[in-house]
Figure: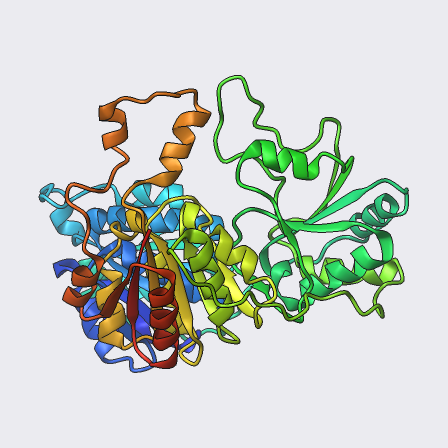
Amino acid sequence: MNGAECLMRALADAGMTLCFTNPGTTEIHLVAALEQEPRIRAVLALFEGVCSGAADGFARMTGRPAATLLHLGPGLSNAMANLHNARRAQSPIVNLVGDHPWPHRKNDPPLASDIATMAKPVSGWVRETTDARRLPSQGIAALQAAMSPPGQVATLVIPADCAWGASSPYGENIVLPEAAKVSEHAVEKALQLLLNGKPTALIIGGKALLEPGLKAAARIAEKTGAVVMSQTFDARFERGAGLPAVKRLPYFPERARKRLSGYPQVILAGTRSPTAFFGYPDQSTRVLPDECDVHKLAEPFQDATAALEALARSIGASRIEPAVQPVQRPDLPSGPLTIESAGAAVAALLPENAIVSDEAGTSGGHAYLFSAGAPRHDWLCLTGGSIGQGVPLATGAALACPDRKVTCLQGDGGAMYTLQALWTQAREELDVTTVIFSNRKYQILQAELSRLGFKAPGKTTLSTMDLSRPDLDWVKLAQGMGVSAARAEDTDSFVKLFARALQSPGPHLIEARL
């Protein structure tokens, strides 16, 4: 067996089931090895940013890594924006990046680059294979590194001669790391804060935003009067009717400061201290109150859910039945199509156990608010702020959960970054409904203009934020990728199209013309 074959067998033995690929000549032996390993499904994407975004979506919904198979430094470069988002989401991903064979490197061929250095900003672990015999063990090391709590991107650079060279199967037991336990001292300190009578914000993140963590946090809040909050953009958030409600911090820093202003103490579980997305002239980027007492109950790499459950027990709240969000849907709207009416329609029709990939920017907030009492579902956010995540993320989520309906709420500007994901959805027959909020501009940038003091921006400035002249035809673009598509000009047509898409399998796209 060669190195590539032994690598794929080892990864399959360790539980890997999916590889998103956009290969080149240096990866041909790795592709051939996938042919020999039926336990790993190979999914082609037409752009590497789709590979990395889809791997992120798969990881968020399964907690397990998919692989990406990328072509040299340029392929990794194309994947980096969504690898940045995946890093912020703490998603486990294994990048397999092909490189020139070692003897050819001295010739400085046209595609040569320093791949390992390029990978470092978006990877928690980077290695470069030097010997085909070591390739299987290094593949397992990459998978173990990716699974190191809370999850990270691991990149393995594979020179072609290490893929085609002779090797042997990996023969050792494969042990995957587990989240570290929190100390008793951390729980005791949180208990003291909760009992001192001061208003407390309990900010949770990571896996604590799944049902067990949500309920433990809600029990603590019920017992002590603390308020449970989350960051603005989290990787995965279980929500809806029957689950405890959580207050999400607003995006703009002054609004986040207002939300937190009445809390002299904050307990963090599975997340870091909140901060502003951007800095502004003559404004503080601090969102926590001055002299706020911040206690880290659980770091992101620790088991935040277990920490919350231990805290609930210590405070005598483990048997409390927490308050949950009641069933509450908006009525089906009608009239002109607006972000409010589109959001109400999504919330009114969202099916039980749905997955929502949200990269709608300024257009998706109403769908989030209106769906608080919809049947329970998962909400996936733009964790790193790098647009172009939404459609690939939905693609990976649909591959992770083929029995669940996936809805992608997507701004038109970001959708153009990774439009090719629609083709993968069509090829793989994925059950994704993509809603494009077509306002023909980068709306968030126009909002930021005013915040930065540009009250009367000029023609050139505004033209860099305008997506018209010509308008994008999303129906034709989607149909060209093999996806069923239609345009909604008013709310009634949007309701009809969204309901129809949810009732039929396969990928669909709706252009919501705002």
